[in-house]
Image 1 (tube, rainbow, N blue to C red):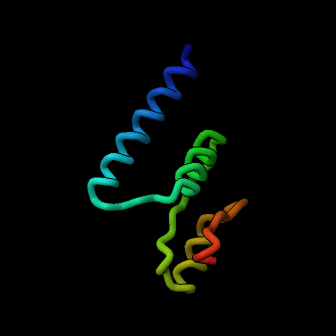
Image 2: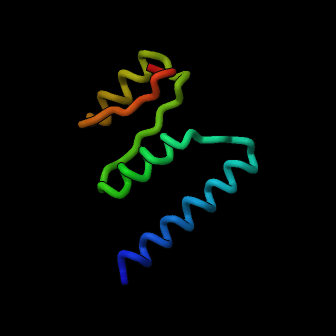
Length: 77
């Protein structure tokens, strides 16, 4: 029952955040939400990066984070 409770709590928080984001007219792409949830449930960490980040800052972020995997959107890549 513990996993079901954790799932319900997580889903409740995700839906609450979705409502808040929509209030501020933000519409996250479904794939982004799926990516975040998959990474979270796999025990990973997400380092969100603004698409307008300069190449120099992006290099610093990637060097600092040392990611095993980088997910990006086709429009941004």
